[in-house]
Length: 204
Image (cartoon, rainbow, N blue to C red; front, side, top):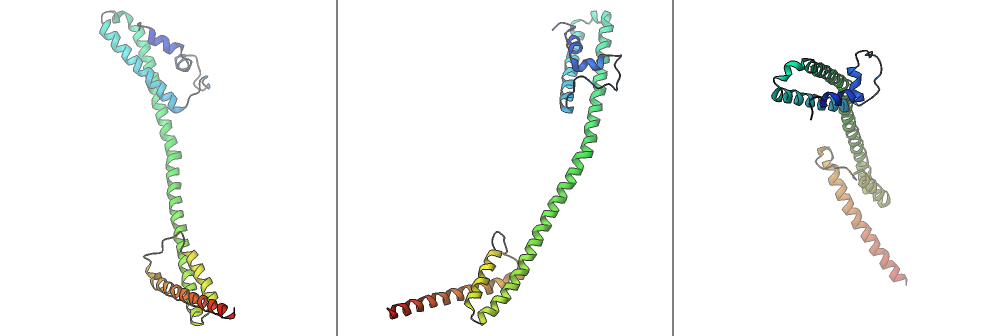
């Protein structure tokens, strides 16, 4: 790479021309619009190139550098402008982080809390309904109302679907009653079926 290659690359780049034009008003919208990440990447790359070029010039042209003070000053001016712009971009990113990332984190936390509250509310609703149905089931079994007891057991089974109710002390006694009534109901159903088949055979 020749000694003026880096500066020529910068001078011919449309993005960097907006920083090199001394007559350009700072408030004028740039011709090349890049994202913050793209600007930081582009600026970092050219800073690295200029730093390498400076080192190369120092090593290979130590004597000649004395007569090239103007060229070095130009590079240093460009480097200073680029570094200032990088700092401005980083400050803008930090402001965006404060305005966007932190509120988003708060919203995310609140969403998790609402989800847990919803799950707790649903669990309490199920527990209350199960306790109510178990009381009804106990009465129906005492009255030997098999049909209504079967309907009650069916609804209790639906309430226990897709949710883990194990380990809830408040439902331990109710769960034992449900299992006991289910066994008894199945026994009576088999008995009724057997009696029905016998009656059918006798009538034939």
